[in-house]
Image 1 (cartoon, rainbow, N blue to C red):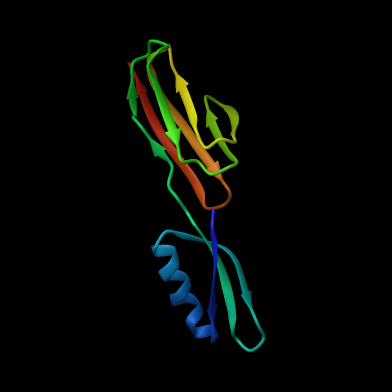
Image 2: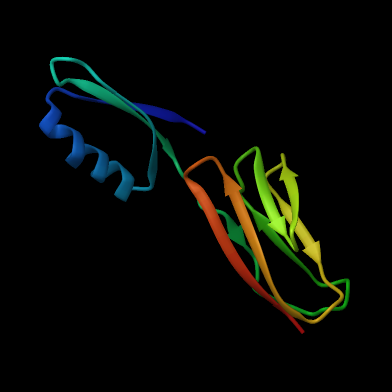
Length: 118
């Protein structure tokens, strides 16, 4: 993922600048402030994960895919942790019920999905 550096000339510019970039979907990676009040932020664009469905048949064949995960990511499903290195997590279920899946990657991405299998 691309990292951009945004400079500020005075400490008073710091909060509005950070807020603007965070509202545009960027996560702050680093902040550096000099003694004179100038400094910079390093931001990374956060691309949200995509889930193709939140309901499925509990037949062991129907599947759900979570894609666009950053590399590396951790997916927690049924109290098991899975390291995802290709940006995709796919699964099937053979027991009906409601399931919770958590996707984590660095301090900026921590998303929970609720799946219903019937």
